[in-house]
Amino acid sequence: MARGFSEFKYMTFDVVGTLIDFEGGITTCLAGVAADAGVSIDGEAALALYRQARYMPDAGLFPDDLVRVYMVIAPQLGLPAEEKYGVRLRDSAGAWQGFPDSAAALAELAKSHKLIAMTNARRWALDHFEKQLGSPFFATFTADDTGTEKPDPAFFQKVFDFVAARGDSKDDILHVAQSQYHDIGISRTLGLTNCWIERRHAQKGYGGTIEPERFTVPDHHFTSMAALATAVRESLKERT
Image (cartoon, rainbow, N blue to C red; front, side, top):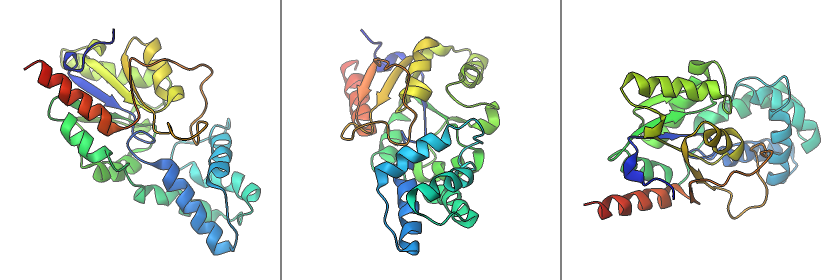
């Protein structure tokens, strides 16, 4: 059986895709560009193209890399291949919204656990995301801080070192994320207890997130942050 929620001191969170609706942000921006150009696009098709372009060998750090990504996918979507629109896509990250349940769930979870953000986004983007989420984090780690991106184990090691400096260990961490590829698989390999937030439970495929080589059955599984917060609340009630 998976360990109970009260057994953890920390919850670490993937941000983009788990807490912030990056797919909605990208497709909304691309739809705006399309409208300006007098064409229309299919959102899921755009996300599939985005996914392919985002994980090319010459990819840069996110979301700065969206300028390059746009120039790759624009011709395939019938959009104008002009860098200014790539810049528009990159800068749209500053206005991406949290999922409707993210801020409230995080605020509740912060009452019982120390919350740590672990994002492949750069610091400037996380600064915007944090405001969207109500600034709930005890600590934050970005690609700028770690020098790498998940699923690189080195990213996780930075967090392990942080909690170790506080006299704790990875056994005190529950890792929460939507990406099987970036988070759930590697967290299992590293011996973390994990919680999969299946944001695309009502949709087919992996959308804008790279598909994992193999599916990892998570320790905990919810389709929303609200459901996780409820489960934690009920678990804590049972102990009192």
